Image (cartoon, rainbow, N blue to C red; front, side, top):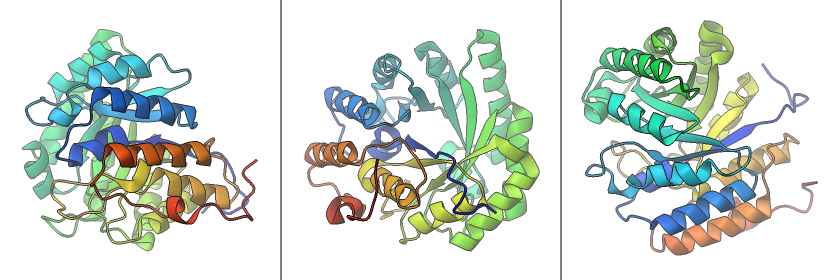
Length: 310
């Protein structure tokens, strides 16, 4: 277990442009998305999930993903990440020049069928085909599998931890280079998070690289901290805590980027993020998404005088 003396940097991947916007009925104009992208980069974010290569008829909110990737690739030091649900999407991601493909895999069989219309093992087979496609293309695009519903599911309920570990290993065996664990529906508690990540590290080592948490029931930040204590140094987060899952109606979304940044800053853990720039961007996003529920605490309370941000 890690201690407070371990202050190795933490990477925050901003997922608002994909995970946040896909849950909203409205479609944000591309010009606003590009402003969001550039401002997030200026605030210090060096990994941003800019969209998803899914059919526009299913997610018109993300139909401009290739355009966002093209601009993201011009921003220095930025890892451009996209969600890819299948082989066709993978080809589009390769064509776009994205740096990283996030491939969703559900630990819950019921969620997998509802979300991707495939069993988890059918998705594993597709991951193998995507790896072959990537290799044949000569691309260096990194393949990362996000294991969703790893801590519970609104459809299935309990998800067996042995199955979570089996799927982590199966995804890597099929050709993924990295894996992460996601509390897609906000069911996790800190002890469970610590236990499952500890088992995950024991099984696959440092190829387990990311934690993705939702704050649906108020435990998002506690779960981030629990994963950090076990050794996770990379987390997904979403500006203003927007986002959700189509199979978790009423879910309050992802942990907010600004709150995650504050959590680590309060403990002296570097993230490279600029609080003033994040809060200013949040205010702009709030204007663009007027009427949508936004979340998080830091924007309301502000930074304490005791925090040394230098």
